[in-house]
Image 1 (tube, rainbow, N blue to C red):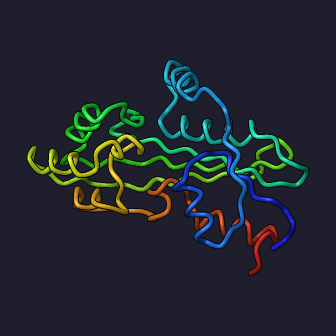
Image 2 (image 1 turned 120 degrees about the vertical axis):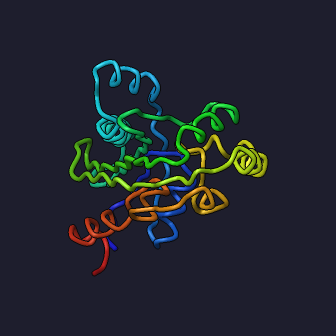
Amino acid sequence: MTTAHLVLASASASRAAVLRNAGLVIVQKPAHIDEAAIRDSLRAEGASTRRQAELLAETKAMRVSAGPGDIVLGADQMLDLDGEAFDKPASVDAARAQLMRLRGRTHTLETAIVACIDGAPVWRFTARPKLTMRSVSDAALDAYLADVGADVMTTVGGYKIEGRGVQLFDRIEGDHFSILGLPLLPLLAWLRDRGTLLR
């Protein structure tokens, strides 16, 4: 690897784990932005769910100052159900209501990543995995929520497919890492192309 530093503009433990498990050495430096205000503004303008995720990822990357040549990664993920954007549920009750709306239907996880160098975006990618939730019974949904507890509020979908949440689904289309919140394979390919990783 070259001496360029990789900076993750996020406090996300799951995104950091994905990068570190792939052998990347990163520094985490959360971007302090008002995500809710940005989302509200974009929605008032009629921005698509995909565009909201992309602009939030870019804003995070650009907000974090880094040394010359450092690569700053900003990422964001939003759930899109037939054009409606969903955020992380604010409570277990909100998660239950959201999961009830998702069951028996297919939704998209708009998963965006932007790389900035010296304050300017130099690369971006958006993955769009699609997940079809099975028609889960009320009893099974309640058992799931009782098992996972407050963890249900840590993801936009109210589930974690790397755990018990995978039992909620009939079909999953797309890259596993993108579902976890970071399109890892396209990022690794870009880093190799620019000589930051060994081929």
